[in-house]
Image 1 (cartoon, rainbow, N blue to C red):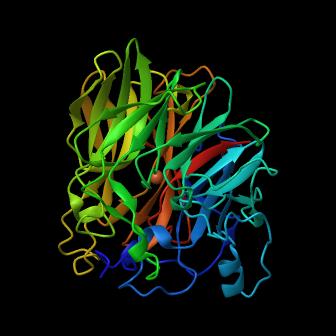
Image 2 (image 1 turned 180 degrees about the vertical axis):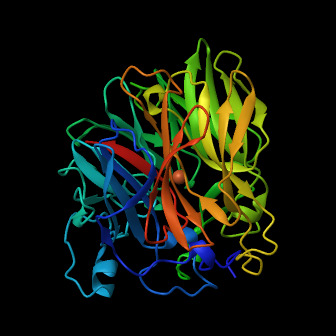
Length: 452
Ligand SMILES: [Fe+2]
């Protein structure tokens, strides 16, 4: 088994696409929330073989709730219609500019740019554009401006509204590509950067003056391609390093700094501090070394890497010892000094639950709020048998302070086999409102609040 059966409990796919316009709400939805909360995740369109199914490979499904004037106007969930998904649903394909034949139902994140909506994924595949109501338009190369595939983790510069990203693909050999997409949803700049091999570069960091790359020892494994599972494994012979490039650099000026062997999917945020660059990251001790689905490789903990650009060293410091993932901040502070962060707390005791015999290493159990100035964290739980998803911060208004706002995220309740969209006070984690969905939102990956 690929390290666990990820077709059990709330990892199981849902089978129906719903459009619900009468939604029950508890509490009061803040009237300033005018937009859509969207979240992507794997939802295999065909029943997968649990022995071979990898969570990262399931076809994508986006779940969304439209909020306006203190009302929840609709809930919709829609598969991202790659040719495979369209065929499975008995529909015509949506032709478009697929990269290198890699037509993949983008399953990892969903973002807005230029008034458009994009389901996105890494490793060589292009975004899929969606309508406001989550129907698939087709694969997208941003009007012919994106040379290759994209990534699941672009960062929006809060000053310019541009999307910065680093993309990777095994077919590029020893290079990755930094790109900048303007507010018109067209790529205005790409920079190729040489790396040590073909790493799985899930995310990157952006500061006011730097782009930071994570060249870490999970690399392409061609032997796994034929089986259809994720073709990346732990590579003990590969370096483990972070690269710092000036934002306006040309790829020749990257400086590399070694760190202890580990893997990072997600930085929380990064910022410049004089001659240092501060990187807050969720650090996994290893990835895909003994468990090809990942979660049995040891606790993932929030660390701070301080890169000394003059001394040429990285100082590593543990910030918080909760097992956690899916870190998010107030995104008005992307690349700037942040105080607060929000991540999903994980438990690794599966006894007695739906995953007791599934070989699933961890499951979400709480929301953790970090105060990195006070050095404290606060944990919110949602009751027995509940599984929270990633939470996204939305400020109360453009001039609100860093923690003044709400957090939006789906929480699954196994007792009723349904999910709620929870709206929490970001300062206290108290419930502000809950939108009760008539269906289950499976365990998934990342989401966005896309304001109208
Ligand atoms: Fe991610």
